[in-house]
Image (tube, rainbow, N blue to C red; front, side, top):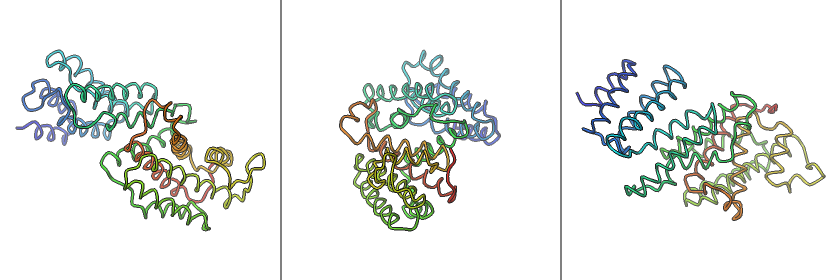
Length: 324
């Protein structure tokens, strides 16, 4: 029986420990899968992780990836030499986000370093900055645990974040009409809606042309239009604190006022919009110089996806005002 057949048979019987042993035995033997590279085995490990999560919960998923990391360090590498552990560290980092973002980021950083080694020593075709760990680090660089008042809110944000993240990994984009439908529910039916549609159209064009700065700029501009619409037309607020015409307000000012007025339906949506605001502020040479993880096309695409998924969550909340 080939490893895949045996593995999938054990998985269908919910014999997770046995399936893990089959995978680890094959990796250690090196008969069919080179344990030093991750071209084949991560697919099987991910399938097992998903089934473990569905049946036993997130804590069991963390234990699984911790055990895989320990197996590579203590069993595989003493026999085979350095093995690429980036996929394990990436998955472990994601699994730990809800518990401890700082610890999660350490595993994501370790994954990125492994990706760099793969490029430098083994001539990997794809640059480390295009891999998933780098994108996650760029997105999470300025998001901390203190951003969230409850675990439920943090879970909601992480759900938005990685729903968009996974869609970007497989190259799947939200249908533009689906985004427009969400805007219909969120933006009052006035001239501001046509402005949102025009910005959304330009954003799609920037995506086609693969222009990361333009993608981030236009995503922030669409957020700006949505917040202005909520404040000016729905709440009839014509000035900002200090008497400034709200139509002249910058994104940071509009975001602060929207937060104050309870515009955001949930903390998760607010955190997603804050991330968009932070990236919009990066469209400045000085700000970008200060970032450890630079803006790339895939990072920009994921920021756009995060905001679009946040809009869909906002639509689900209906026409109610958020309460902070």
